[in-house]
Amino acid sequence: MTSLLHALVEERRLDARAAMLGITGGVETLEGNLGNDEESSRVQAVVDFYGPSNFLKMDEARLPDGQLHYPADSPESQLLGAPIQQVPEKVWEANPIT
Image (cartoon, rainbow, N blue to C red; front, side, top):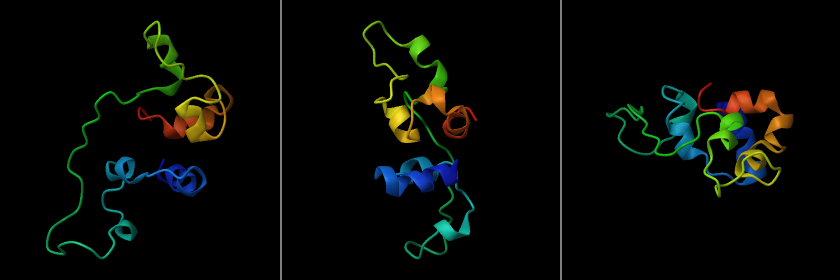
C-alpha cells in the first residue's frame, strides 16, 4: 500500500502523511532529520473514526441518502484513478482490510 500512496501523492496532490503514519513504522528512509533523535517516532497505535474498511462493500452499507462510492467521481475511484469496480487489484492494495 505504501507504494500506491507514494505513486498517488504527486498525481492526485494527496497528503498521504496521515495514512502513512500507521503503516510505515521502522522505515528508515521516512524518518527525516527533524525532531528528537533520542526518541522513537514509531507510531504505536492508529485510531480510525469512520474510515472505510472495504471499498467494494461501502454502497451496500450506506444510508438511503448517503454518498455513492461506485461512480467514477467518488473519492475512492478518484484515489485509484478509475471506477473501483474496474480496478480490483488497486482496490485490494488500498483497502484498509488488506
